[in-house]
Length: 156
Image (cartoon, rainbow, N blue to C red; front, side, top):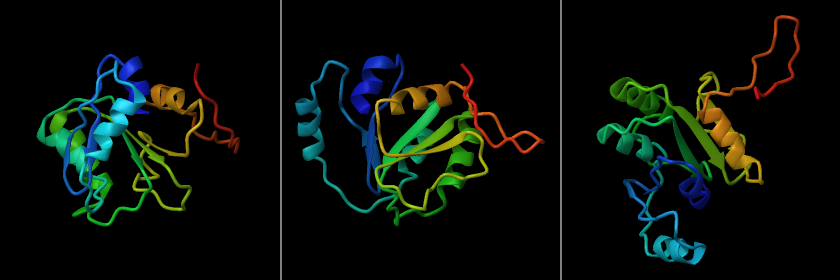
């Protein structure tokens, strides 16, 4: 996913995190083998899914979207992710989307289900990058109508 983003988006940051967060030194021209070699050298620790948002807040990085790829196994957070997201939005002055891409289909997500700028995705397929791009760009599914129509329709 980082390779797709690096090769298709003009402005992006790739980060790695555990209980801290830092830049993932990849470039659009790297191969999958190159990136795998970098990732294999990273030391892992606990899991705090709010770390990318804390990093973006501390570095005042204005983002259209923060995409977090996770198994939703987070246990080292000091505060809920939606609280950190609200602080990031207020501090940086952007209404960034939060997109949680879960590598496991669990009944749990760190995203606030009432936040219209948050999206949960379970798993990957060929359409995942397009869905992420469209959601970040503000092309959201329509809310159910007062007539009870529950079908979500994507804006083109």
